[in-house]
Image 1 (cartoon, rainbow, N blue to C red):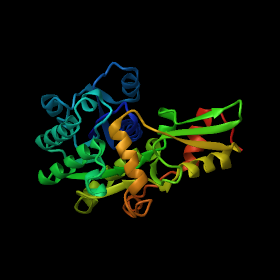
Image 2: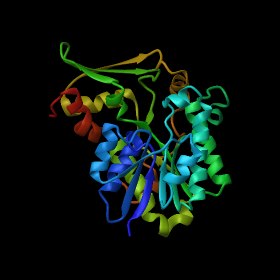
Image 3: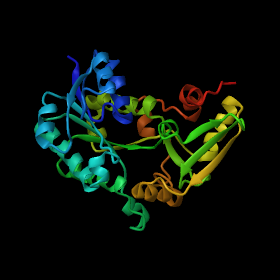
Image 4: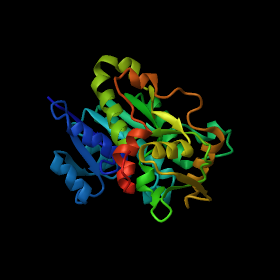
Length: 308
């Protein structure tokens, strides 16, 4: 019988990646797609693909207990840019803990949690971003409560170049222009192609849980294929489209916590010296995609550029 998986943020980037992949494997999984607005166009599209779309609010523990009833697994993620969190950053930690409590109350067998390390620990307290801290504190809670879980450290998303309009093609000057806040042109970011790889890593955890749960339980998996600078990204665009590019670091994102996070990247990089791709992800038979894949499949078409 297919196992029922509850996916948080199912209409978003991370949750959407997990939902769409699991729906392609209906012999093994059913998906309960959690969203605050089941009537939205993205939610209706998921329902058409076969998901059970239900309303869920991570700030309401009673909601969560009911929506996780009968589930075998959970993909958990919180969104710092949710207005409830932006207006009250401590809400992100509460939302994550509410989800953990509901999972434990329902006897969830495998909880996959999208998270980040402590910016306080990385920077020695100089650069503290609530985008990091809220998720990190939930990690501790998961361990303290002995919730059966796997932690996913995500890279910076390739998709931001499209969704946040970081890159555009200037037809008049016949060049690609890459604008991103704070990040220096030489700063290496651990990068993740969310739509190709986050769902694949999550599904692999679910697939291998029964056989490998003693190894996987409370393990950190690094979801990133490589560390790249903005100049490396422009080099891929040049190689595949023939277009030259320029990079310009903007002074601010407009979100103070995000500015702190990016300054942390400039000073400390991402995930220390951890080798990427992660050998523990490779063991799960997941092939991580890279910048050339993203340029071919998404970025060049988005910019209206032909491939060489």
